[in-house]
Length: 190
Image (cartoon, rainbow, N blue to C red; front, side, top):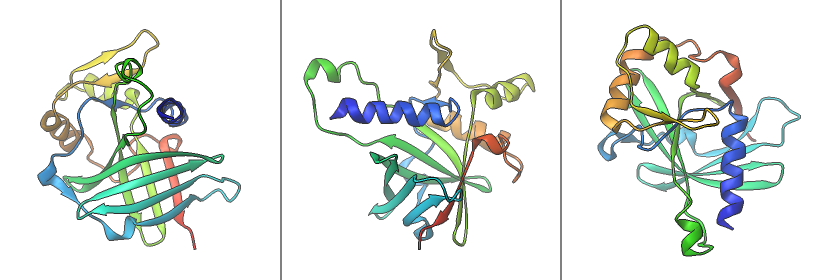
């Protein structure tokens, strides 16, 4: 069962154009906020899509996200934080049934994060790519620690506070930070 969810997570990450993953979250517990309008069922604005994002309230400041794509379900812990003027969604694959102890030694949990914009019945989720981070590094802005795998997948290894500081200094516009290729546009399902 855990292997199934890992496959779904990998597929989701690849679908999101190789978004950046992080060992640490983009939030601290004291920075978590709850946006009641996020709770509910959302679908992509493309009417042909059968993808559904269902946000449920877990507790005072946390969500559970059920991501359903092509009849395959993946469940995530979802957390929202605000850095500067922007909201960010941090996703983390929820624990699933244990297959066995050796298998569990080979699964490494990661966080992915995106900029979040809610406007009535519209929800935009903007994922960051490694190219965006590299551009900011070229501009001489504060860099983050990271590792790159043989297949060019990137994992940020910086501490949460360094990641928050980086985002505060580098996300300075309301325009899409990635261009439309990295934006998932959703509408509230009626």
